[in-house]
Image (tube, rainbow, N blue to C red; front, top):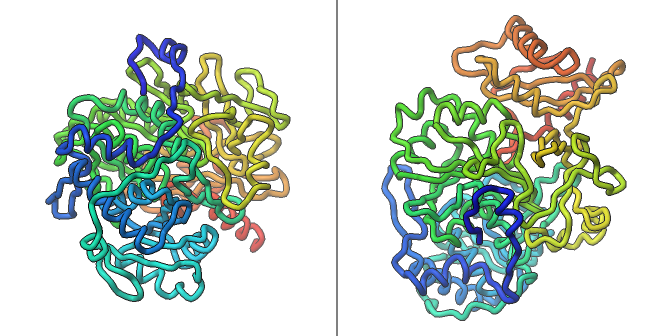
Length: 545
């Protein structure tokens, strides 16, 4: 989609969307390549023991055709919702492509979801079918009585507990299928938000969502699609980050993708995988990248061939940015968006857009501004809400069955994000925090990102989260929850040392007046810190005293 230019400004000035009227994700990321280069590598499935199985575009096309026929035989029609409760695996891609070919709507669900989360999403979406594995089946089987609309369950691990076997269905189905002729706005994908306020909402996207992602992902991966490119992400393919920041853009560009499923992110294992498979491009969420800092001298210990590193999902911070550049010899191209409207701000060091502590500039094709409560664009250097102007091809269609919530997402033509930011004179945006994450202390408004970034500069701190704890005098005080690095033991003396470390580097109003040490931080399945849980914990502490 992008053509190289001398610099970022020239690229932006010369960019214009040229979108086809008819478009189907499955055709562009699979079938078109299968017709041109059938043997081209699409997915490499790496097992825990290091062995791998390769899938060509032709094999992926044939398999997804088979499953599209299987779904059709089970009565799944265009517009029906098909849920996926699967890890990173070829079958996950096959099911997605089959659903798109059929004109149905894919509803990815994270493998870490518990029974309540699954029941809500399966009920709210009205999913008619679910494709899962043995672990997912064990979770869903007890819920079937509560899900009368869920007509079919398919397990990739074979039949059982009211589920059909994936392989059995595939064996009976034809590998010929005519992909549905869909339009840009025909629904394709519904991803549930994490529910930071209220119940999660189903974010419905049309097939155009992938095209809308391409400029931002191409830039964050330094023009993805260069000879020898091979991409991996630890992000769950049930998340927009895994699907739309990694899997589908890569396949669209003809770049093979590593599929590797792990129960828990292990930074040592991640470096080993990157080195052993010759990975050239990675999308690593900020929390995972911060965890990788714990691995000593990775460039010396591993034969890394990395060409580009993209990161998004929450603020990366200056410390992780500088560590990656120093240790790995590469800048991190940070970018920004939401499930509703992703990859709209970003970086590309190769074009001179790279700045520690900033989430980048507006990606070509997207108009982003900092606005006030009335929707008026604020002057440069003023803190306000990050907003994106519609229409935009990457923007969601609606919240599923929630027209009021959809309308509330907009002020005029600006889609609000609920994220606070500041845009400088060069167009770089600094992410301050979500509206409900910003700490109000003694009339100061404090973003947690800067505090967390400073905490990470202390050698004892492995991970950290800063929240506002209710306080009668100051409205809120800054409280930090810290996971210690190996070799350090929690103590009052260490807490005092860390507080002093932040106070001398930031300011007297920003340092954490309280520090608690935790074994781990609460995180979403997408690797974001759940500050809401920490705020609730701090609030309960205050009520108990």
